[in-house]
Image (cartoon, rainbow, N blue to C red; front, side, top):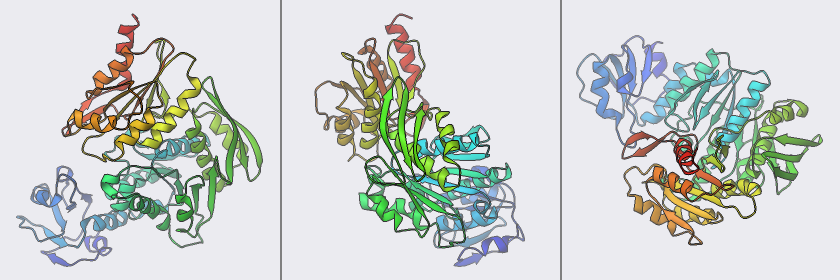
Length: 490
């Protein structure tokens, strides 16, 4: 692409040196720079791209986009801007020719349920014969191949690359988990969403946002940034049981579809029954009442499915076809996922790491608890992150018969600091503090008896632990199965 044309989309303060006639690639990582490329200096949490500009030039970058003049050696032009993060979004969207304009973009935001709702929509699209891509916490799923991603919402460059790849692979739709961090940091610049979905807003990420008000406002950016072009078929799906939905409905001019279990909405559920690994309910819709049977467990999954139903209804799919897809759904990986074992206990893996998600996980398991048996709940939380939610997490976990307080990704924080904060919220004495997560998982097995239920919460699909700044292999399921086979003599 011609360099001047590409850079025309950003406000430039100053250009130092001679711009090359064209460029063939963009990069924000000096290790992946190709010859004749643009390197954009991004300030991250732990590193500053400005410090790696010379390395990028040495690798062939011919343009460096920077917030300050740098002392660089070699044939390179410096483009100085006020905000390289904003510039990245504008340049990346232009470089890939605004790919989100060419496929249906579905964004899902909320504290809990983003991964489940996104996964449900993605699999239903495939079941209905549409090629679909999916990006989020679990990674980037393109035609059944899963690529790892570092964040729930990738940086602006990777986001545009993923949408472009989905378009080139013939996908008609792409479903994206949209995090509050991604919205606040501008990682979604240039993404034109056709459908925006809200799940709920509960205590999380206050270490980043400061207050619940700011956290909620960040989520609202998804709806306010959908635009004002009413010639486009766009719409919003909101959880009418969450008070933030009233505010979000006012942020967009597009049609709003609602779902709920407690309040009036376009899509509601009644007569919910949870039994023998099956959930059934009657779904009320604008076209009448329909019975639904599904393999997804718990009330929270009823919410998730209602959100997905509203998405498909808004796109014009017949309700009979939508319900047929629901009945074929399998649990989303790491979300109240029953681990298939030959052990005499039931093991669930879940991603719950907020007070609300913990409460929902326990609510999902309680209908399956047998008289005289225990519900054992293991919770952890990340180190050097929002400490204010820790006591509330343990308070919600106290509904279990026995609780193990541990860590998720301790990073640089001491084990005792994390488990001590959690312990402040416990409402009974039937708990243990074990900072080493692997040992905590083994302890859960050691106190279990045949017929008990164990929920390992916090890691979900993740197969690692971050200690310091290093990722170490870790699987709750594998450790639990190994310990269980030793305990129960398999």
